[in-house]
Length: 370
Image (cartoon, rainbow, N blue to C red; front, top):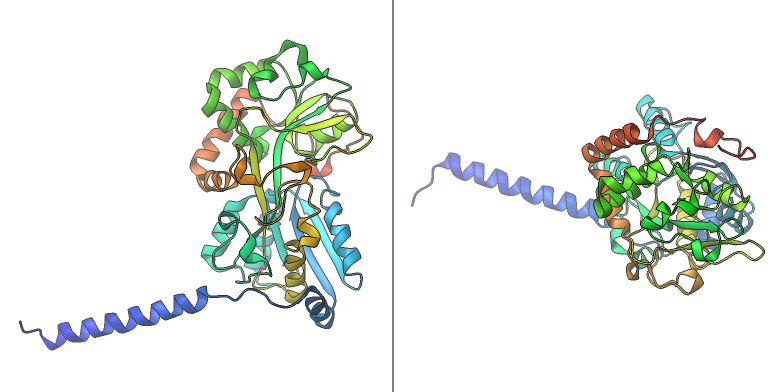
């Protein structure tokens, strides 16, 4: 069979470009795992200027103090600037700073709950490829395979109760327990249409028990609040007795008559708070130090819920996250289905009513919500 010179030239051109594309992809995909010690990375961060800027997702200003105080103590010469806010605010701030072309407002690490944003940032090439030490020990589903982002620690929403407010024989564990008339006036819940994580919880309740259950739950007239911090604050203060739209330490805290418990049979929510280094970050050595420390046993072994490393045990004698009725990977997949998420958000708005109150970060946590 004879081929024209034109066909041969086109074929050679395609093969050459395919080979170049393949080499480019392979070259950009391979990133070695960090081998430097924390002390070496600390020294580099100090030489760089000794500053670190973190933007962390959350709904209460002191929400990350538990571990950030440990980080500051561990690396005292580093000047740390951070702010906590819901991802719906932090993300557009980062997007606007990047779009404006200025580096002064771009943080060194972005750390959000809304994992779909990291998928977008990775696709757009906005994040550095970097694999901190111990990256290979992170559960595969909870990191980008090319190192653009990685999970740092698990956050689980489940039943948090005050046993001074609710008798032990009435403590709710599964969804149907929250319909008990004895709990009327004692339950506090976060508006699902104001928080994607809580919205996901309600989606799963709908899938398990149907729309009828959601209507019955609303009919019990729980106190609805903005943000997922107010429920644990209100329960700690004894204002209310139970919530499933909040989080707390797995291990009971001495002196507190509260319990954080998984459902007996229902599915519950867990995700791994993710972080990445923007390409325009000014203090990349400090950013690398932070990510390496977060994945170190120094931190992972002290985290209050599920660790992201599969070789570190969870607190309170729990097995790792894959041994429980929860799936961070499913939460990530669900967040990517924005058409479903936004339709369901509007359905919850019409079922429950408009969101009331200041944004979570501006709430006065000394005032009892009614």
